[in-house]
Image 1: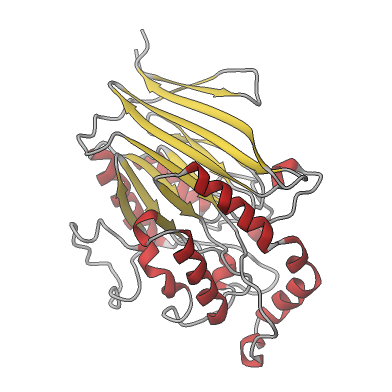
Image 2: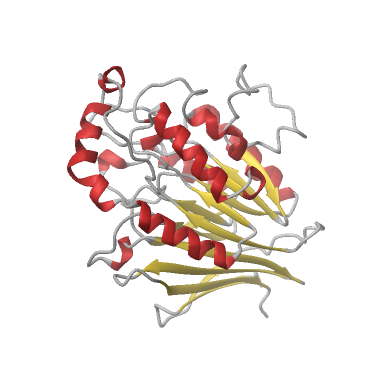
Length: 344
């Protein structure tokens, strides 16, 4: 009889069975990890950018920021969320993109300062979002400023002939970071697009490398977490915000396997399941970490704590989402647990 995963949720009154193979035991230093996931902080603010930076799509983005976005993405909301997150004392923090509004060099420097306050590069992992690549810009002066938070630890032990020639400055995507029994695998879907598009793409070369990374981490018995900005499930966002090569990515995951996928982009709390070689993986989308509360509770600023543990013959994953209320306090609004365990 194959093993079974059970999905349990306080917000639902049903149990959803999913069959999968229990991953092999990983003989690492620690068999557990507490991971905090937040996304789309849009933390930057600015006066009028230099005119030369607005001769592109950024002009419309700046107008949208002046008109609306600066009023709903609030620094005080993000600060409240981060204070609450620190109280939870996670082992690691994942930020899945859109740290900025327009991806200007000044914004990326602000974002670097915020990341440094959030935690050391060893304790925080970041992938970029579409707003971080709003228009073509030199890597080194924009998203490349965050490269220590995207450091690829697999490249240190595995040669890659397809890595870019400027690898010392530009981290190869995907990057892999090992924390306890977990492999955090970050990909970039951030590409400049024309207005009104906010689409993303990985590209064939990144998909090939991703499949290789997933296979290797699976052979090592790691709990594999994919960090990505754009959602990969069908109908998660409208056509102009979609991941254009999502079908190709889903095929890679169906072949290589993954245990958990974390994304942002939709500014909405969501969860889904994804077919893998031996069952299904959990997919979680985070709301914007700086959005003011409104009538839609799924869009309220929040973050999720994932507790991953190996217990003898099983993995256990518990996801607890903390959301900001209109009173300005964070509270637990949902909790779910998965068990990969043999059943009779």
